[in-house]
Image (cartoon, rainbow, N blue to C red):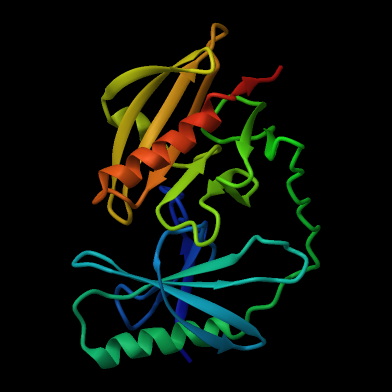
Length: 256
């Protein structure tokens, strides 16, 4: 019997991209990502697959057709498990439905491999702020710390701040994996917290845009943060998101 799926590496080329993915043998373009990250997609519906409840979030444009399946596992605190299903574009409904059914059959087998170590909850101080220290960041010199207002941001993972609640539209990535920042020109330089930051803007095909903040210290250590935006249709929402993010970046403190 021919296997229904082939597992293959997936380039870690952007936010939420899985390390590995399942590629459907008979439906070209039907791909199930085995590990995703926070995304700003519109909620579609809930479903029960296997022993887990899943929230399904949707993005559909002329160039993308994605369902993002999200579930939570006891012991992981507020960190979701996310699997991205990419549908083939411009196909008949029955082909799309088969892609969905086959992917959901895989998700129905989902089980945690082991009991995870609970993620410590952020400690909010008397001023309502959280100090977040990071010791490993793929695209930044390390270690460093920042502070953020607990009522302005939610810590989605150890390195990603999102808006409280749904987080739709504005997230600050402190350890970004996207490695094409140098492809965009420097638009401006701003001073935040005593450091001069170069600002670049990267277009993003999924959610709108990414604003890159980077600074280089005297010892040649480079630090780079990404502000992920889905608000490009609203200048005011973009400005508000930038203001909150730059308030965090202004607390940046490099550590030896």
